[in-house]
Length: 116
Length: 116
Image (cartoon, rainbow over all chains, first blue to last red; front, side, top):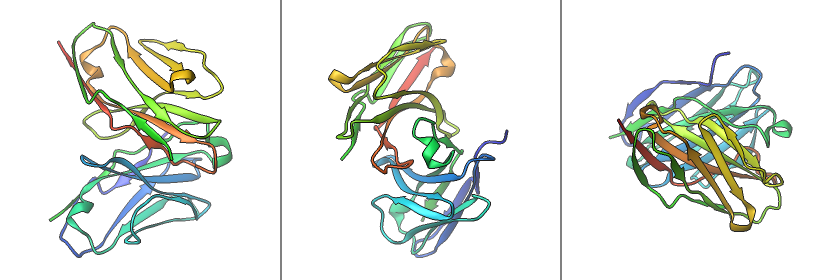
């Protein structure tokens, strides 16, 4: 079974630009979550999607947004990039929420975004 | 608010030594779920073990074991007979049950270096 796939693996953008990251969950997984990892703040929850609806959102500005498609694939978008947005962005998938509390999240390799 | 603390930022051991990684958590939820993840240099978070708050039985799985003590809010993880391939950053994570979905709260991580 293929794991969580994130594209691209690496991305370099300049301040003020916007970026879109993509995530394909494990087959059969319908919940997708996004996390940001930085040396200073560690791993922080961005948002979670299930059935194309955002279920939870972390404490991030509105520049960070996401969506989920009917095939459970998800994208996240960051607009007006700032230097502090440089991070590893990790996507994770799991079974439907009502079955997922006791099941682990399965993470992708992440997209490393560098903002210059 | 939930919080996970991993006081050990870095541990260095020699191969075949046993090593214990500490994790202390805070939550107001009566039911919650605890996880350990491993992050090798490739960046992907790899699920290792999980425990529910209502099950304090400690277990061993191969070279891994964990000690969950609700009275002290601790969820420690032990690697027996460490190997060089165990070198990675290890994260403890907490998921509540009150509409938390897949929102995990992660500790700051412990970097484990196993020297040959």
